[in-house]
Length: 330
Image (cartoon, rainbow, N blue to C red):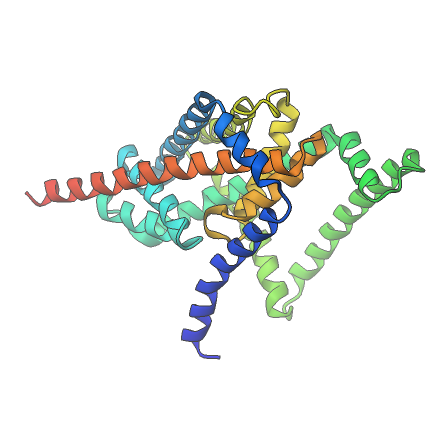
């Protein structure tokens, strides 16, 4: 298979995943209920959620500046925000390419080498992954009984649930310890298969990226901004609950679970989480007794409002970058 063929197939893979997931979701819902939910939604809460999402992207630009400054370059928050928004817009066309575009635009507006910017983006993504894993662990253990009951109910094995918790918890602990030992053992080897070595290098990169945060002049400010970003992500999930009568009773625990599921859904290589978000988020809401149709309504409103906000802000950001370039040439 030629490199050109691989590239074409890769480009076709992402929209194919999105289309298949959307088709799967459509066959599981009641379209009439979804349409009714969308018509009767309170879009005041949707607008607030969109503003929270926009603010998270602005803070991401502020945090990005902290990573650039120690390299001796003057970074502007304004141009960083423009680059972030254009990057998110591009991700809806081709996943992950937006990060490259973001760095290219920032390099053009602030005269910072692209390779150094890619390094800063990698560092912040590493830290975001670690925060996501931490939030996931907290959510799982804080809602352990709910998750266990749901799994046992789904598997039609409610009997013996008293010991089920010990088995599942014990299995998680054993798997974690075993995974740590396997990682340390493989890391010392010099002849790992290519795929295994990529996994080892990825984990090592995560750990190295996390440590690099504390080499900053203001590491605690970086942590603060990270906390604000994830708080805004949480508010996006939580505020949308109030837009629908059927989800308005859900609490903070459901919002945390929805945030985690939504984050993992966006990681899947579908354009901007299209399809994957609409499939997985309703599955997570099943934990709280929300049927698939209502969960899909929630997913459509949540994803659609954020997508619209990104398209508008991304379009305006492209215009502002163009105006900045014209001004610089005068």
